[in-house]
Image 1: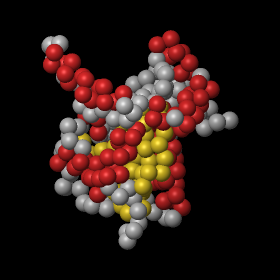
Image 2: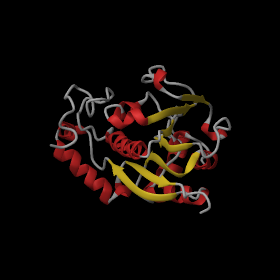
Image 3: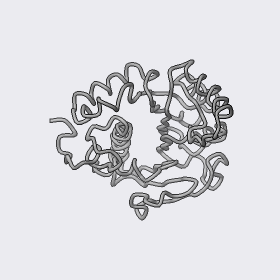
Image 4: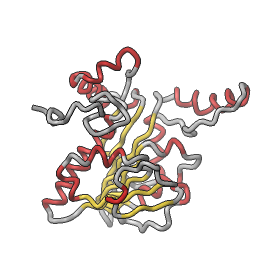
Length: 255
């Protein structure tokens, strides 16, 4: 038996996520991985008789919460969120310990430094026109010894420059101008270099998601072997995937 066998095939990704009908949705599998890691950390806190404080920056509709809920360790998490504005269908907002409204590019001054054991920033940075303050803020609000999960869409190194410099010119030459949600273009090398330059966080692992997906391959996302194969590819060559999720830790105080 594997850890997914008990989940209902109910038309939702991993049995919990209504945004995708495929059970092993490759697009949503990053949240499945995230939830398992958070649950493991929460269990470690529980063994020490402590509760774990988590801040989810840019929670969208509460997708991380949905994936975390089935884990019994979720009951040991004090879950807070921060966003520019709340999604109108935010999942169970009454369950959040704190809700902060504000612009990550302004650094969330209302949030104290060294406050959270875990910080999640998944699919946010690519939407921001300025990155220095947001990345520094991720490190600032994280407790020494804490864990940061940060995820962004990526391109293979070098190809990201084509999108970064080419698309703005294309949009100016061929009107009407398209309003693009993603204003940053990342490769694995670029995003890890930025975080290294701006913080003292230590990269522990990077895992990629979706090298090839969708189209005629979509039916395979009901198959566990296809999901496991893609997970293995993502661990082996994360820089060639469509999305990347990186796990950082903040050195303990005095280091």
